[in-house]
Amino acid sequence: MTEKLVSDLASGGTSGIVCMDSVADLGAPSDWSGLSAGEPEEFFAGYWVDQAALDPQWSINLEGLPEGAVAGSRYPGDVFYREADDGLCVIDVAWATLVAVG
Image (cartoon, rainbow, N blue to C red; front, top):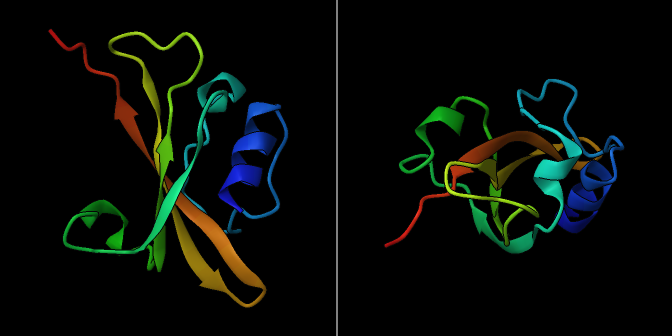
C-alpha cells in the first residue's frame, strides 16, 4: 500500500488511498522519488503527539532519501494510516530534515 502511494506521488499523480479529511502535506513528486516503505507499526500517541488527534491506527516509516537530497533537505519520513469503511487511508505524513554528519 505504501509502495503504491510512493510510486503514485513520485510520478506526479494522486493516490486514491488518501483520506478525504487528510491533513497530509504531500509535497512535490521529487520529494517521493527514491523512497520506499519500511515496516508498519501500531500507532503510538506518546511519540506522535501531533498526529494523535487524527486517530491513526498505523504508521509506516519511509526508507531512503529523495534523489538529490542534501543537508537541510526536507522529505517525507513517516506515513500515518487510519482505518476507514473501505480499508486504510493516509491521514498524515510527517516530514524529516536531512542532517549533515561530521
